[in-house]
Length: 616
Image (cartoon, rainbow, N blue to C red):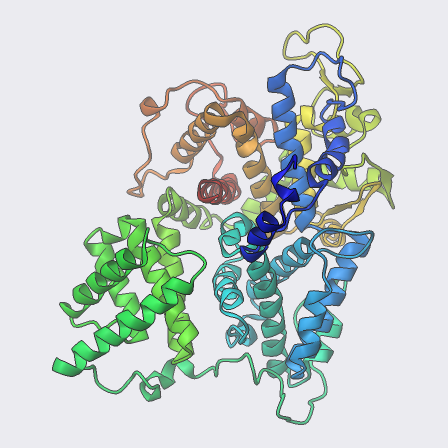
């Protein structure tokens, strides 16, 4: 026997743990990464090449990141297939045919095969749709009634967290942290939440889930705000009957099973013992918990119960969770993440119990908000964004339109026309790098092999691939993320948002700030593959930009530059090339007032990405 995987007993033990050995997986992964590495100038078949190990590792990190992104952002037939699966599942589940719904999920493969969508594709499409729907002002009233459907515990826990994030438009951006639930739970939870959201929309429009799904789960712009439809007759599986929380749930708390007076004396002790017993059982079965052990988490939970009780609050009641969080903030208890994480587990336990779902969903929102506020840098950045958004929207729109980053988009769309060939990874071909880079005012030329050494600011960049021109690469990625362009493994075409972008003389403010924000985040996180030094560069960039964004009339604590060293940073210089900052050659760059909102959005995204990386 040459491998433990040839031992039947060993394989059997792995299977009981949910682990399956797939022979050849590593080889297949390298086959998939090969074209991405080639785009980075690394040929896996050229063993005599002069690439050093550091360059190969950096290229591999970038290729892996792009590979992972494609797993969750299907295009073409795979995206259409993912939407079809979501439609079939939602129709089956909402009409009460759970066996058929389960069969639909079971038919989705874990790995891509041909044009068929894989589990990762369903997750990515679901999270993208949920972000879009739950942040749409025209859908907000209808989707307020959405609640997590009944399914298995793990999927419900994942769906609960996804719902809270989607209401902030951050579900897809939080993929890294959501994976703590496990791939299968995230898959099922995301799909369930799509069905729940469709059910809420159907109830609001007085139509069927089948009708709504047929309109919005298509590969095109038809997933927008609801349009009136003919009402349908009520039935045992009426729209939203399984998934909806009554809109009056907030006012109905007093009638819930936990509303009658608080337990006192001996009854209180009995209630606390029952809580510890039931919560302990839940923790033992949970895939992951906040504390090192169940006993530790129960002790911390009891401490929270005691703290609340000392101030007239009762954690047996959902409406007392938010006041307890306020109390923790006042006492600096929320600065300790384990406290909020324990409260997060406790709220999930209460949601699984099924009592006063409306109240506990609101409590969950409060905990999620507290977790967000406790994240590094999110507080001051949020204040900076709020202050920046006070600038007149028309002024912000006009200023963005004058930056090379935004001004060049119409020229790019004209060049793309009905379609242009691209690399296998959807990037600009070497032959086109010079022309497209010129649109941004960048001197670059695509080459198969670099010749000599580039000298001076005016020397053109010799680019083996688009990745060697950071401003160009991140501009392209930002436009793709905003769906202004759509790329496949063979071509680039105008995306769903292209018509909206070009409809007027100036692009829509929200779309332009999205492109700018994603661009900022992409540029600032590029050094991440360089390990500890890369993270130092990222933090230095963040501090410089935070100081540039901080208004003098707001009391905002910003780290001192002396703590990390001064001097220019190449990432900030790239932002200057895009027209978003000035003075990047100094240690004190400036951001024009009308552009501050876009840059602040990018910084918030960077902080979220760094937090997700730390959790992985």
